[in-house]
Length: 218
Length: 245
Image (cartoon, rainbow over all chains, first blue to last red):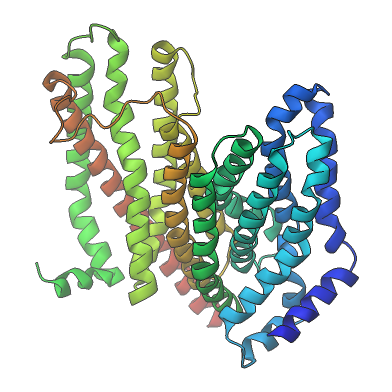
């Protein structure tokens, strides 16, 4: 299980376009927003939490189809399926690797992007908290979407269509935590809801992902 | 009726035969109640003292919104039946219901916008109910797109079933998330049996007829489309057999 994780991490680091791409995409989204809505810092500060969450979500989405596609093409997914590791474990490790290569860098880099969008000072803590709590759910849900579309030739677009509606609750609560944090309001309820969604998806969704992956490998 | 008798309809031949028998009746009943309910609603109810004649949109808006949700619920149940008991008719019924659900969702959204414009002064507001319906619409789109994308019918049935179940959980979550996220313009439930304040009887009686009409229409369309899917699959099997010689 750990060796699979290390292998996946190494592949993501070395094969071009996996690791830095999400982060660069996040940067570009953040840079483009002021061009779109104007450089007024009061306005930027107001929309910063939402934009940062949307950017993180889209950056996450961008790298989803890589979770299984390469392993599917060269047949290593079949090997993994016949290995002693249960499919649920494979799926969980894949999601974890995806989070470590996309979600975690996004969390760590988000203060810098918050600075670009003149996020109020008290917002940074809650922005990071919301991303740390929320991005694992994004990775797990995304892994489910990737498992659904793994055998398809043009799965990319369909993947976004399937995954984005599933992201709605996470996005709502995540952005709500960041917004309330930035405005200095209490954040207890949305933090608990966000944590609940993450915990629930991490606990249950790998079973669904493993189920559809087994169907796709049949 | 005991349960065994119900499962007999999992046999495609039996299902088709029964549908052929029942379908004309259901269609006629649907037509009668729809035409009757709508004419009653449009021409034989008074104008509301505040809303004027726009109140009559209720006779399309409420039934279609109810069917949009019921269709998804029906897909959830048939998906579960397919995953547990592997009855092909069940999977095909879910496939057949999805486009009808899309249309119902669209009708509910469109009539809601037309009603909202004069009443709330806006075509669209990010109200929890409106937003959840838009999200439901996205779920329907994804579901249908997944059916279209996969060639192998059994794989498609499996994957869409899992998507439907997972999607139901997330649709439910989204419903509460948007409630939390924004307060609404839309009124609460006003057709319940245990509430003090309900839609007035002059409106609610034709409304119930319209709801019955929409339900019957939905049943008729699902029957028809499921039977078509069964025939399509049989034709494919026959053609494949012919090609083998």
